[in-house]
Amino acid sequence: MSSFKGSYLYSVDSKGRVNIPAKLRKHVSTEANDNFVLTRGYERCLFIYPQDEWQRLEQSIRQLSGTNPKHRFFIRTLCQHASEVQLDGQSRITIPRELLEFSGIESDVKIIGVLERIELWNPRQFEEYQQAQSESYEVVAQTVFQQ
Image (tube, rainbow, N blue to C red; front, side):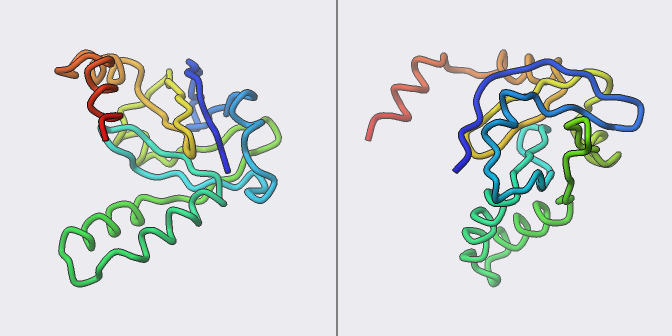
């Protein structure tokens, strides 16, 4: 089970390649074999799942109802943008052009470890996302942990 955490600022080259930080790579399980699934995330970020984590997510998705229109929309949207990628010899992945456009990632990318996945953000959009939150981290934490 992956346990990604931390925040890093990297560059994307002209071919859409970005390095995955070593501190995140060390948490990729051997079962993933340096294979990942990259797809559209929420709030215009991108999600990167190691192959084994993607398989766990797929199991959950398969439990959704094919007769529910919202479930179908979610599955279609997630899967149509999914791309299998592998680390190259320099520990980079290539981000497909359509996902770069969706996320607004240009030359710089904010890479965030979020437990079972890695998120890629346009740094400016991530800053705007954080500033747009109407409640403080402490208030949200209190709500989240209030069972």
